[in-house]
Image (cartoon, rainbow, N blue to C red; front, side, top):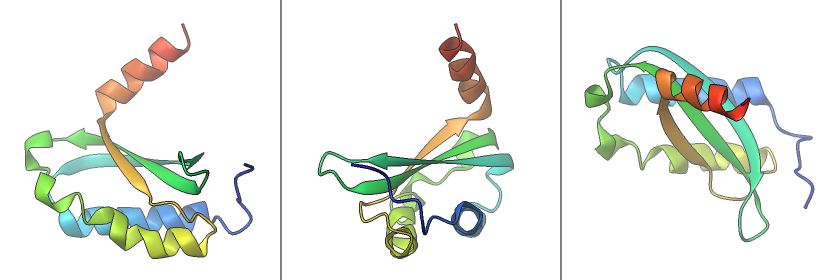
Length: 105
């Protein structure tokens, strides 16, 4: 399946993710990068995998607030042509850098 990117507005989606995170976790992140990766799930549906690369105190990340992020993003995802349920991964910046370094070896 070819990913449908015609309606994908990365900046708009990234801004929505950022807004949701700031509302839910106002003190958790000193800095944050948002990496969007359009993907295809096992049902052959396009979806958006969002990597939240953060520098901050992981203990301040209230895990009970994480599951509600996907339902907030799903209407926007579907409007952009991604019908699969969006997912998010929280990755500490040091781990993201380490993974990137290992990938190039």
